[in-house]
Length: 266
Image (cartoon, rainbow, N blue to C red; front, side):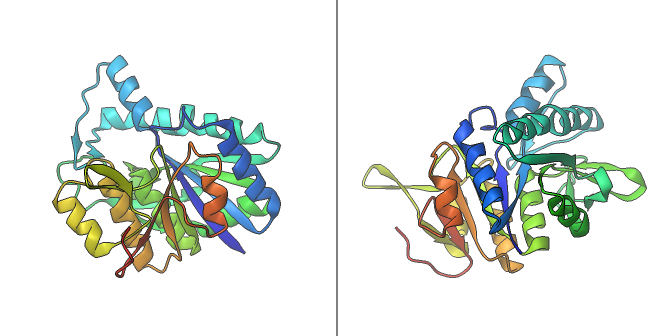
């Protein structure tokens, strides 16, 4: 069976048109490929933290997660955002199953090596693939919030891009990052142009020159990690475009496709 992991950026969950969820339903109904949704919730988390007067900061696009912040992150991701996505999918006549990485020990993590100054931020070291497959075998689309469980029951906030890449790696699935832009932009002759293809060397150069920055950094790094672990395909596409997701599934040129080795740059 072929799988596709679709990662929805938390900043655009509220903006995604219903056509996006209709596309997911059509993918499920085609029975050619089984979709798994992984989502973030950054914008709503920041809003809730502000409402509750809980301080929050970022380092290289990753949220510093104290115990107090983690309570809010879990509430928003596994509650509000997760169930919103489940409802939207179900409106299209297919079944969805909301779950966090804690449920059924779906995502097991250790404290991330780079997280010295990030608090309870984790790196996934194990994905419960059988649980995902069992959920899908019952006809459900898994909708996963990236809260993971570690040793002695410690919860970890996991970057949603990283979580999606880990699940794609475990299933050897195609990976599609849904964004509110058509892909990675570069500037040519004073005009912004979308890179239809890019590779590891160019990505590292674009990070160094700060063309790629903020939340796009963990996204492209997760893509490269997934590709190195034999994930067959990774792309960043515009979820606001009703045709983008079907085009990705059909293998057509859309958004920015990321490769490890040298690609033809546009």
